[in-house]
Length: 116
Image (cartoon, rainbow, N blue to C red; front, side, top):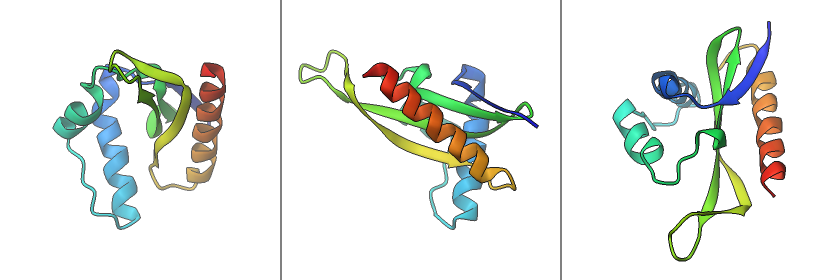
């Protein structure tokens, strides 16, 4: 079994919705996500960058994600990469959940440090 962390691909959107809904269903949060909402609230944003939305694959299956977020510049022209946060972390509940989450957190920290 192997864990791969990679940037978001356009074909990942349905699996991201599944991961989100499965994660929140098990943790008893009433936060159902639709593909339309993901696209409208995240993917269609001007400053969405796929390299800031990391996907976890466990044996070729999308099993989690982490989304990094950054503040916008005052003039609204771009984002400020000097200060970022881990905005969302979701993992499909499984025996490997903690390993996958740890891998995503490590990859997010590495990406944030790389960006400054």
